[in-house]
Length: 405
Image (cartoon, rainbow, N blue to C red; front, side, top):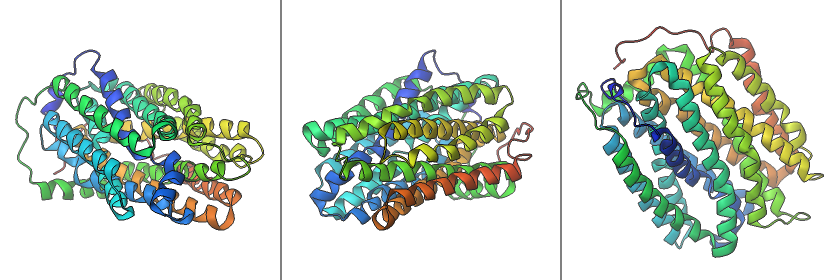
């Protein structure tokens, strides 16, 4: 969001609405995970290729982050966010009514591209908040994102068993339309017009921000590795739980997502710690916890309790690092918040896509133990990167009065 926008203030209670809207939007990226087996059966997609569904969704998400989210620094937020939500509803309807595998994959890519409205909402909420409270507000809004991710798996598993996978996307389309109406009424209109900046310059300035500044580059690399580990778990755990001897239904598989509710708590706490200047320690602790989470996860075939413990640790760690990353990056250039967060999230999307494709392929070839080694490798590499760069991974930044264009 641009500097002019930041002179307005969100109405009281709007932060909660932003959190709910973010959760509703981001859930669409994760609905397919408990439904992979059902989608594979209906569209004749082999188990080794099921990761393509998640990967294309993440590729679409990455494109949207680079091509759509930066528009928040150029266009009025209310108009941009409302339009994105209505187009997302249309993409959901397309997926819900598709009849071929090719159309399904195209629809998933479009759905992912439009689901980036989540990041537009995060940037919007941050831009309407004074700096002293920004970390706390980003934490609350991000806790909505976490909750949406968790409920996505549970709701899609439940609805998939009760009414078929198509009902998941039809229900989400209706909720997305409701979110568009509510946010149109709550988001303040822009006051002073934004300075003229063409779309091409807007995109090139996003690249320039990352090439000039060390902090967003480091935080983006953390995001790539952290979400590669996150996607490694959630893209393959459906397969191991649905295979014999467990053979769990979609509802039971989706219910494991609720165990990551600690992630919502971690998001809120991490935001407060960032406001108090503890971003670097929070990052190190989160990455260490992420690496350790793969020890119980490796025992999933022997104990569902071990899986539960690993899920809690992993989601808690991921969200603590993610909130810290976003808070630090937005503070670097508040008037270019949409571009910075959009560029940062491109790396999130790349990591998620790589993790999904690698995990499902590796599971088909070598089994669950190999998948856990992969996830631990991503996590450990992120921890090593932090250890070697921690002196510059959360350095204080001076306020910038003017956006880099």
